[in-house]
Length: 533
RNA sequence: GGGCCGCUAGCUCAGUCGGUAGAGCAACGCCCUUUUAAGGCGUGGGUCUCGCGUUCGAACCGCGAGCGGCUCACCA
Image 1 (cartoon, rainbow, N blue to C red):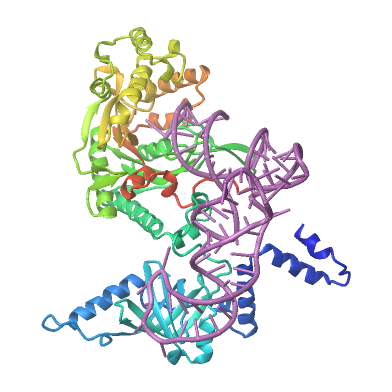
Image 2 (image 1 turned 135 degrees about the horizontal axis):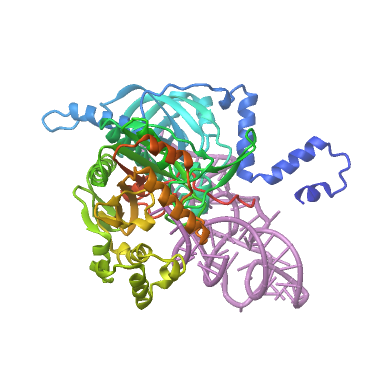
């Protein structure tokens, strides 16, 4: 359409090339066009910034400031600070993006941003000469430069690099968001995370913390002789959790495959094989709703330890999470959305039945049969909270629904809820003396589940019965019932030692430790619909 | 999937009663050798998310679509 406007007048002599240029110019903002022109001019002068291959940094911004302050302190004699301009660090080279430009006639100040923060540059005409200084003044916010010079403190007290030489390393062809308000549109922040990282330092900090948390978790497990393994993401059967999978296809095998929803059944095979302590930290994929707590692909760690049980997993969980908290935040107390959370061991432990009772729900201890439980459910008006028709519900389903209704939201401080109904725990060992309950717990923080752990069911005959029950559930219309994995059952027949296992949602742990409101704030590139434009 | 809300210059936002759009930052030109949301003078910049409709006339009213946010449902 823009093309038509440009082509419409009497110009039948316009060459195609010019038309293209006109069309291109119309599609670009004025500012983007000017930057491209500046780039073209540099290239014509043999100063193509994109031809530069390397720049050796001696420092980053934050370290430079620390070093300079230390040097000032060393130069302080009898409490008297050194005279302004007498302390210097010579021969530094820093690189980064120009974030603001205070442009003077013969001297300019530039804020340079690197990985660790910002440092001011002081540039004057005497050091660079008139020609080079004029070139500096054509730089734009968003350009990436490398500078060499010395560090000093300005009259106003800002630690700065006095620039002796400046090299343009990359020309930014698009203007950056506004320097004061920055980038605020959440959609653009998620879609164009690189801009978010450039403009919002707290976002950079969040993702640095995420890295520290992940490293801390590996460090904790590795030091306890766990082996990190990688299990398949492409699976012929998606099992090990109650969730709908993503479906994909192998061309070579002409086979429908699923993206994994859990790593459990493969990790237990590793235990059967004798690895004793294993974990897999990686992405799971669940084809479900998206909201502030759920992203379709999310990071999960599952760990399995032979010769221990769910109580061993509680200790592991407390140790692991508090270690991550210390590494990320410096302590075990964390403020999440205004509420102080204490992650130091020991966490509160309570049975599911007691959690229901303590939070104003019914007492299930006298409920013996499914029939009694259904009566109770009708009396309490719980039927709407149940996932299937009341007549298909077992006592376990109803207890679980009561837990979710009465107790879950009140579990603010880290709490282990123990003893889950067997009906909803098909991979879990029963409690000795009570076949209706299992040795399982989930950890809750701020009303949200952060982990799930149990004494692993290792009786292959009982395991097959449980899968048969799940198959019946599927018949009744539950498309999230656990799928039978025949080879997994075969592995149990080879023999798995008594084992404790646990899964922890990494994104959710990170959310608590960095005080993120939405899961999208801790995932660099969250799942988004394609942009319509 | 339901409900509510949003989408205007590169960015952050105004925009009255329906009369063809404005500020700050950014850009461009000039001045300024220690500034830091630098300052002063001047200039340019718009597919008002898209489509259809109502109207003499739509950023504004109606219908539909797209994308997003919040929320409920679903879901660990």
